[in-house]
Amino acid sequence: MITLLENILKRNDGTYMNAQDLELIDKSLASWNSRKQAYNAIEAKETEIISVASDSMRKGTHFESSPVDKLGIDRCKRDMTMGLRLSALAMLLEDPEMFKDRILYWQQNVFLAMKLTNYMGYKYTGDAIKGLLPKAQADLITPYLQMAHAMMSGK
Image 1: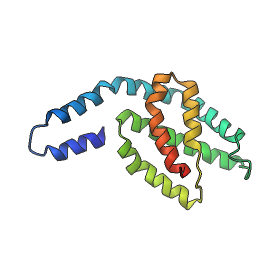
Image 2: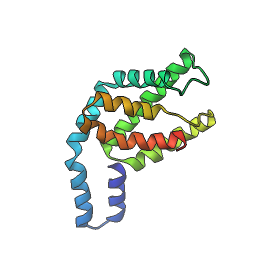
Image 3: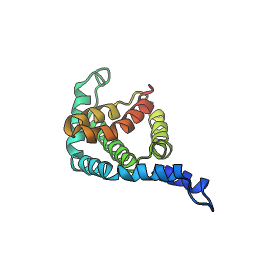
Image 4: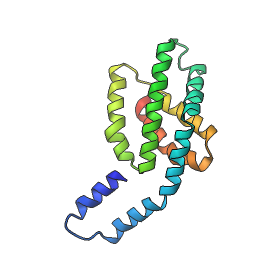
């Protein structure tokens, strides 16, 4: 939404908006309540989502080759929580470009500096959300988690 509004402001500097721009804003506003409900549901279930996601990650094959200590698990939960919150915000604002430009590229650089080239937190977070939220709400955030997973896992 922020990127949409910025682009519209640039295109219409000193002029009236055209019908296409007005339609884009109408479409974004029409889905606001659904996105807000999903955002609130994610916030309300954040602890459970992160718990399920981190447990799944620990039980999976991801850490078999290099076991993770408590500090590593705590950091992973912190990263997953931050990722969930930022994904939820991007979904609420309906702004994948802002999500990539202002968050994911930065996080990708941090993970590369840490030599963490196959981060799976977004995948496990998405799986947890699909199990804990109604399908319609999970479907709203899934594209953002998939985008983040693709960027962080090197796929």
